[in-house]
Length: 307
Image (cartoon, rainbow, N blue to C red; front, side, top):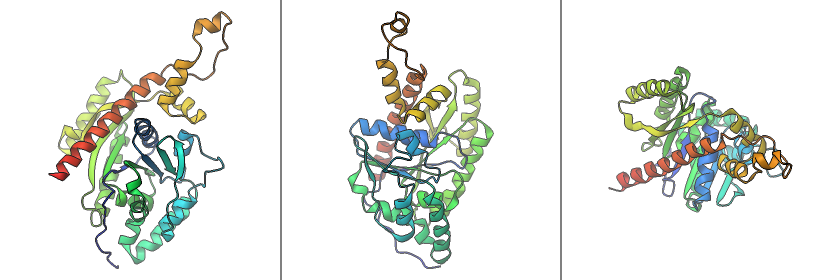
């Protein structure tokens, strides 16, 4: 196989991939909501949806709309080095490169490319991102759980990896899959680093379950430092309402706060609003904490790398 020259990653120091070998661990939820919170705080953020399911568009409300290309632009960038053209202004300071079914074709193309030049396939997304990375303060990649060529391309582009995992054994097994994928790209991305593991889809009362899971993860990595202090609880009503409305959790929380009070509805002074879950505030709080910790970890990593 042909070897590529060392890849210039200047400007790509805050490209982060959310990845796990298992589905349903809130990768897309974290990508969308952490990105949205940072954008709301003033960061210029780009989200890249590498998943053929395109669920990031459901969380942000553009899926199947007139500007959703179902992953066509991203697929062409991966296969033919066409320029990435983000969907601008999905939120203030937040742009998105949509995913979707077109990425299935790109995955097949990356396999064919890799048979001729392995480095080229691994660096396909990195090359596309490098041309616009300096336009953003952070770039987050929502990685597919089981599509190896797309996942490898995502890891080939990332400076850091964040691994969401459930507390069950299946979620933790997904961590092993991530480790294997990391090994496959270290030849082209030797400085790729693990930013941390986020325990997700749990409940605030499951303290013993969380403790056991955290101990198992810490033992696997040889340190507790790998674990984010915060967790993201799963509230089905909030998850369903946010995705149906195409809003982020902090936006849903604000809608709940701005909605009519129960006594106003009871007295006939206001109409009730359906599908406004009270759990939105709790989940929003969790996501705020994860966002703050992610920024803290990023800044500390940058300080270490600069010294």
